[in-house]
Length: 303
Image: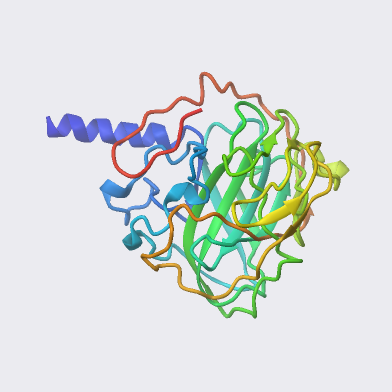
């Protein structure tokens, strides 16, 4: 019987990990791929999108439990690192943001806005850790707004250590991330239009159909104030210009057990170049997005 259960768990882990997408480097909080994560903390539906009940940021996993907040990687400020995603349901790509938090997810600073072709252009991609990023313990987050299928937001977070850091990430260069489809504001993305972020910040990358056009006019969403709780922005329901304000990050430890796991975020921005366009294969949300759930830590919905 134990052998049967173990085999089922193993097969379930493999199939769940490949359903949508998840960070495989660095390992996300509660990742079933991380050998250091206790079995009872592994989220076998980690590839599913955020629920609309407060699982932004990080699916509610920050300091939940505190023992899971060990650093997954150590990076120098100013260094270029390769982060990796695994999974199969890329939903035709879309737009992504990479961001960092130094206060257990209360505020965020985007270090890269990748608009169009993310992640279908590349499942392993580069991002430069800003020289301004302070030394200390931080959260590194990957946020994704899919092009095709149900309107969703995906958000994986990994505790990391930054060394040889700078004085801090300012709000003008590294603003608060875009948030939609997460139940924390009225913002919803538009299917088949990759989001052009209203405040992408200093570092921008274009891919997919945007690789040659490099649009700057906000597009691909409806609603206003498209940020997490506690942050503010102004914008229109047509995805027109939006300004956002955030606070700069400070090098505060993220392992405090008193932090609110569902604290909402603000901040961030990222690095510029262009990626080649590739055909975006439509992915059916009805037959490739269903997944099972396991008992244990809080789970997100299957779309």
